[in-house]
Amino acid sequence: MTLVPLGVDHTIDLFDAVGGGEKQALWTYMGDGPYLSLPEFQDAVIAKSRSKDPLFFAIISTKTRKPIGYATLMRIDAKSRSVEVGNIMFSPLLQRTRAATEAMYLLAKYVFIDLRYRRYEWKCDNLNGPSKRAALRFGFTFEGIFRQHMIYKSRSRDTAWFSIIDIEWPVVQRAFEAWLHDVNFDEEGQQKYRLEDLREELRDQKGPVLLQTD
Image (cartoon, rainbow, N blue to C red; front, side):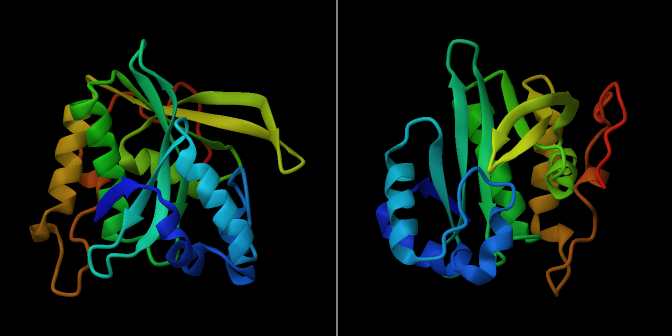
């Protein structure tokens, strides 16, 4: 799995992976889309590739060398050394795969190791149960709900906030690396241990109030 800056040359393969009428459900909780035609998607990719914040990364399959999703670093605050991971678009080729977890690990590692940031955020629509469950699985700690935080696609959004901070990263990193190691997978590629089972306990990870993930 490789992360590279999103470019216009990724348009056709990405559209095959996430565009068209049959993929509309992928865009339910995204700020844009769905994209039903290649020309409109190409315009969007051009704009995304030029953006500095959010900063878009294409997720490239090791097997096919084709993009099968993307994600961004956004709300970049270099002074406070804080950044959010967002606009996460996993195509059906990427969802629930080892590669998807690896992509999230690589971004987090870049933030904490290369950039030496202090805070790494994850935010999502409070109605998006899969995203909230994913945040906990990846080691983010729930911080609360921002009520009526924004309006998008003509609906009001309550936003669930999560974060990993630098003192927690070593625990999260060790779990990621243990889970991704070949010894954690059988001959059929099925995990032997869940990511959560390989991680030391993070205090109050589900927050001071009950987080509903269903």
